[in-house]
Image (cartoon, rainbow, N blue to C red; front, top):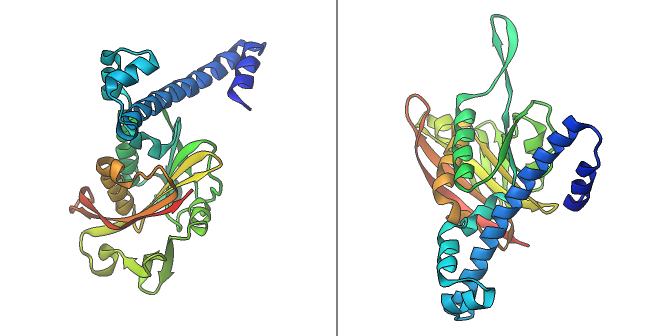
Length: 277
């Protein structure tokens, strides 16, 4: 339903509780659109200065804004790379795994998946995103509507396998040597050092794609600490990986971790590769 139609539907909803809930949800959508418009205006001002050779005073005159307001917009509006995660709100999903405790199966979330989510929540907060969270169950197949981040490897749920099936650049493969991330672009095959020889290093997959006018970011480590490594790197290097002209952007991240499986460092191993829109 279009936002305008939703607005009218809320106004005419006779149920006060439902009307209040729907109004709150739409407020969040409006706020995210407002933040995105601020980012777009800042980018337009920067482009007019760079490409048209206009001074910021001239731009202000044409936009009906003072030079001081132009300066304020340039310093306060979100950076261009905010668009890496879409417009918002952004939903973050991590696996709800099944373990055995006292002879019973119990669901749990891996501590590294929690750390991954925390990295992402902090970064999204810095970029003024509203967020929601959801569990990825072992049988979850579909990506939720709207902009989202899926933190899940192919062995955890079919949602990850379905996303990987539509990626022409990178893939996951399992042989006797273990899980690997296959570089279809560079024809390389990358194994986890931790799984291979016990070295405290792991690797992870990072993909951003635009589908149905929304952004899906997919993060998957060979192990859960590899996923945290991706989030660790992305939090510090968002502008490096963001390509506004790309429909799909992929890379592989390698991370280091200590004896408690806390990520201590991360670096770009492969990519970023991009497919233009």
